[in-house]
Length: 172
Image (cartoon, rainbow, N blue to C red):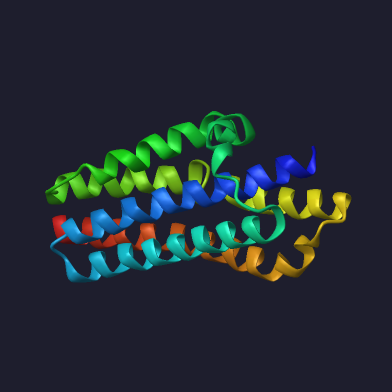
C-alpha cells in the first residue's frame, strides 16, 4: 500500500459516511414516532461527524482528493459500491409506513453490521492506523478521533437493535 492509497481510503470513508448520514437523516424525517426519529437522527449526526472528520484528516494529510472518487470501489471493494447505492435508495423515500420502517430498520441493521457502518469500518480504521504506522505518516495524532468513530459505530448497531425492539413492541 502506498501513501496515495491511505489518502484514498480516508477520502472514500468520507464519501461513504456522508451518504449514509444523509440517508439516516431522510428516514428520520419520515418517521412519525418521535423517539425512533430521534434515534435515527442521532446516528445521522454521528455519521455526518465521521464524514467531516475523515474529510478533514484526508485534506490535512493529502490535500483535496475529489478526483479520486472513481477509485473508491477499487480501494474499499464491492462493499463500498453496495453501501453507497443502498444509502442513495433511502434518499428517494418520501413516506414510510410502519411495516416499511421495520423492513428498512432491518436493512439498516444489515447495512451497519455488513460493512461500512460496523465491522468493515472497524477493520478499515485499524488498517489505516497500521498503514500510517508503517508509512510514518502524521496520522498518529488522529488515532483518538479514529477510535471515537469505532466506538460510535458500535453504538449505532445497538441503537438500531433498540429501534427494532420498539417497533416489535408497538406491533404486538
